[in-house]
Image (tube, rainbow, N blue to C red; front, side):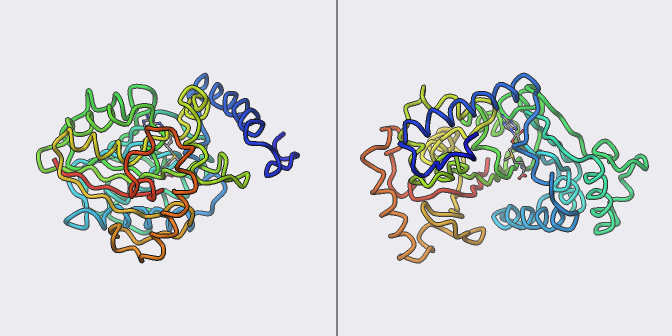
Length: 317
Ligand SMILES: C[S@@+](CC[C@H](N)C(=O)[O-])C[C@H]1O[C@@H](n2cnc3c(N)ncnc32)[C@H](O)[C@@H]1O
């Protein structure tokens, strides 16, 4: 329905009302069916695009690991429709990869099989892990998929422990309870193990898609924002809350911004805030200042953190 309306011309309260109804229906479907499109990254892609994206995500996350690679037992949370990143981890020397997802992301089964076959062509050593000739997500020794509430980041680590690394891409901004998830993950790591997560704090086009300010979703009260976070929608947990929880956990960590507010330029993995050119930081600060008076108090805690709209962090236990 929203596609037939000039959304840029709508007053914000009207746009909010239309979006809230739409989001409520989507969330109700996700919760009732346990299915989502949120993790369907490869629904309309080609095999070569899926492989290239997997390589990019692997390289991005590995770049901030002190050894530039992963080993031992790894858990990926929220893998979405594909096991390709899990296969990349196994091919690069990990011994076991557990993939834990709260929801089942819709997918094209034939495409997933083709991606898995392409991963084997790229890494022939994976062939030794094949248990059958169906090439599905159940076909690989050392790779296990888990779905549902007990596989959510909040609960999975109550009963799965002993990891060298727990990682994710574009997931923590969707989980229901970030602090509980981080505490569970920290408990589940070996001493010396790492959390490595890429987190996208943008509004996922909820309001920017209709030409609004990138921080306009942070002007809504928690009850009004409710429908937008139900069923795995963006949770609006700011960077300052990640810092607080990691501090409470006593972990050594570093934050690497990948995108600043108001400009979708992506900075290379491992870039520190002060490595970003001053003019780009000033532009982000200007964008934050425009929104600041109307932001809810809990989002006003750290000005530099508010300038960051996407980041990767590495935390060591
Ligand atoms: C935007 S998708 C990212 C998928 C994939 N990591 C990628 O980069 O394409 C978010 C994923 O997080 C999952 N998710 C949402 N809430 C979760 C939770 N509490 N615990 C684990 N996974 C969750 C969704 O089911 C979905 O697969």
